[in-house]
Length: 306
Image: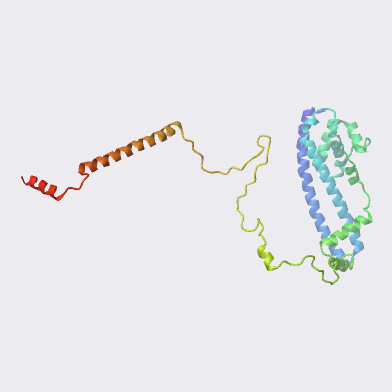
């Protein structure tokens, strides 16, 4: 028997391959199912209802198989995400459903990578564990997996629903006269929307006159709005009354030197003003405070001539 660590490392690789392979098979089956639906719509359009009912069972079986592959893909992703829990010899209770569902359903699929992952799980947990999973003796296999693996003809109600959905999707009138019934029901609904039965309903309120409209104050929301809106912050225990602070120029506080200069400037201005006044007074005295007479001017000229 191979060591547990080597089995887990191989299982990790096979799970990754199984996930990618399962996705590819699902995409392929979905594309084939679309082509089959077009063929069913063509048969319904030609009136071959019995042939369409038989062939639509293949579409139903294909959809069930696609859903089964999707479930197995999810289980593989779960095991890959919890790969560390696969190291012990005993199976983890949280992974028992996923492991037994893969062991139970893998032989019913055509995905070889998933079958190889199943072999590694059987090698890891033993034949007795695998036998319980195959027979589902303990009921640990997921119920939805068991239900998808059942081989039984689909119910007539499910077949009718598939055919109606295909006809609706591709615009086929099936059953015959269905489009007329739907149009009649739509017209009845339109008639029910008008409860007045052709009679005019009186206005509950009289219309406002022009004078009342002119006196009315316009709503606050009327007119252009600012593109910038600021929501006030919600109150908290640290700040019970929050306020919105808009960005602006920073407030400059004067330093000690600036305040000292401001105190000195008025004194210097007063002193300079006093000096200016004294200079003006002295100039006036020097030039002469009185206007000289004619006689005094004559004396000065005579003194100059000498």
